[in-house]
Length: 136
Image (cartoon, rainbow, N blue to C red; front, side):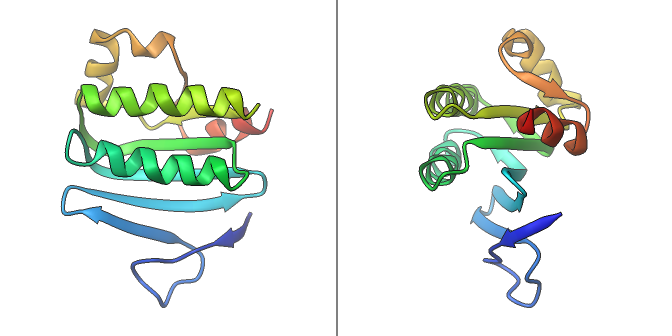
């Protein structure tokens, strides 16, 4: 159940928060009870990673330390994107929260496997499972 949201791109829909960061990345954030779920769309690379980190840092700083990152619509992630994930994981840990990733597939999963990042994060197949893990 969504109990709070902010809609940044399409003002007519109060149940979603879509923030177009650049032409390469878009973030859709929803607060689901105690969990902030962020769907990332596009590329997470040197052009966009800092903006993603800023957005996630703002969520954590505002008290949303239980995060889900839905990466099913991410077409590419670079080392800058992986760095952002590591920084976010450390920030969530310091805030005594939880981070779960979901929707990782295709080329992005291959890159996670190559970099051995699958062992560093809680990765679940879908958003519902990730939200449940972040709540636990």
